Length: 107
Length: 128
Image (cartoon, rainbow over all chains, first blue to last red; front, side, top):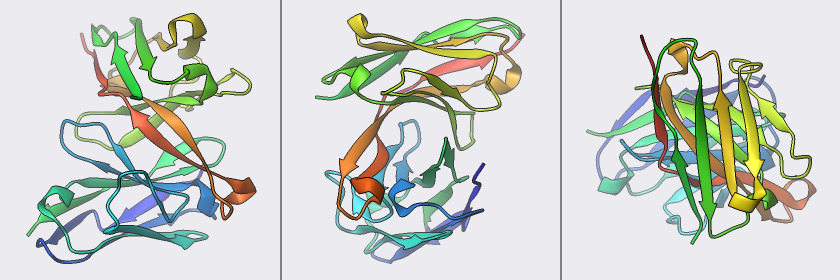
């Protein structure tokens, strides 16, 4: 089973700043099979990025994804108040696995 | 509008059973791979089971294999998760989520995947 490790666990930033979230896989992941989700308290997760770098429909262009092999990154430029939430990376091999999440909080 | 709605959660004693339902609207459920994903209180996301679109077979996480069974009723456009021999560690919000398929030339085989629609979830509590 592929294990995904996200860092940092908590990221404290101010609105307007740039956020960089990392996701490291225990073995190589196809870029087609790497996605990112946002989750706010009491809500279901929402797909942000699929295929490592493609934004899901309706997602702001402030969100971008990159990476390959075992190292992947979600970048949020110019943080807005509504961006402060939990973020999870996810991969699909023979089954889905999720990273443990990064909490993006207001500094 | 694509919509998924879970139901059937509740309080059950260890060793008991529960059947969750996921009702789909706005699309044909049997045309997509549908997943169950759970989230224990204050914890992250854990994939539980999938109903594959092509085979109609179920895949399961090791933590639930042999105890949970996924099934589908095409006439009702609904997915189910039969949960037996429940344990305290099964306590979680259970979400059903649709696997979206995206056709992009740079994707492996021209196809990328992501869980693009989620229900609001249903809470399962296993406690004596």
